[in-house]
Length: 382
Ligand SMILES: Cc1cc2nc3c(=O)[nH]c(=O)nc-3n(C[C@H](O)[C@H](O)[C@H](O)COP(=O)(O)OP(=O)(O)OC[C@H]3O[C@@H](n4cnc5c(N)ncnc54)[C@H](O)[C@@H]3O)c2cc1C
Image 1: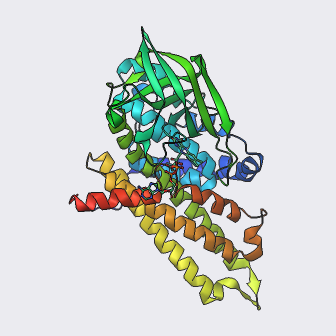
Image 2: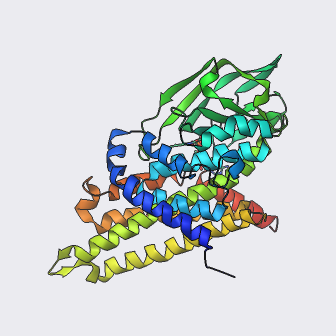
Image 3: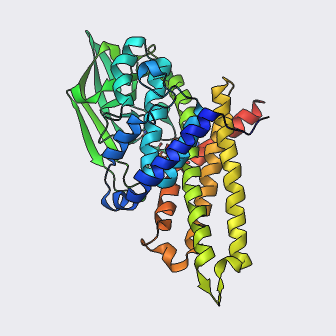
């Protein structure tokens, strides 16, 4: 067993850390307050290949491994969880399925432009009636000559209000349940019949847009189909396994910010003539946070390593996502407590971390669904 990172992995982590510290962190509070998509930062992330870290260089990506992706996403999410969410979706939920299931032509047409940051992608699975149970989705795509005609509405789509591309799950054959689901990759800007619906007012990750995507007799060319008809459900399950490594990384990043800021505050805030870090009640909170965060990061890196080494990683990814988001939620609540009244006010970023942490327990499968996945794997002896 080797806990050392390779030179390349250290390099990308350090580069991401420098960029996050200097370009992202100083703007995070303002972006959150204005609910503003960080367009300029996203463009710069694209130039650094951070929106397509594992995409081979021939398609415009970084050509690196999933461990590098985790390391970079932790740094970005530590600075700004909203930017982390946008980066995670482009890497895991847009680039991955096009890479894994697309043809060379599809990759050149739909993937290459999304690696530069000029244009980004999103992933449309959820619908009003299909959340934890995506097999209940109702959006249809019917063949008409050389086109697919799409009708339906996707809900809660990260970057759905700003993305130029989307991978969406649709029913291409009704009455076949999940076996009738297929994936389409779409250039949204040249799709008549597509429009952005309501943009949600949320609790956290406020600089990351969450939008409805509405398709009304929307027409896309026949080359939009990813893989074969009926393979969409299986593709979606694998895409989400990788996506959960991204959510775990986001959670670890938020948790790292919480620990760093709580520690700094505890070392300087004085009450009763001493710094509050001298009180055992505060020390224990910090010790629990640090230990649980290390465990979460190791689980996340293990899941990424398994993926890099072509070993099964469904259970490991679910464990990492569930544990990292649960302990980061807890840490952020304690972080607010350590800062007392200041933790509750916007003068410090701690209240933002607490709002941002919550979504990691919900999206890309709630933590109840993670527990189902983990236990199913256990029972099957995996
Ligand atoms: C900010 C944000 C961004 C998002 N981004 C995207 C995106 O980019 N693309 C996308 O497709 N979706 C996205 N989503 C959707 C997200 O993945 C879903 O909200 C999530 O999967 C839960 O679905 P739901 O909201 O319909 O909850 P429901 O499925 O209705 O669940 C409600 C509650 O019931 C529990 N529950 C449901 N089924 C079970 C069960 N079998 N056993 C035990 N408990 C159960 C859940 O855990 C939860 O606590 C996003 C959501 C948000 C809020």
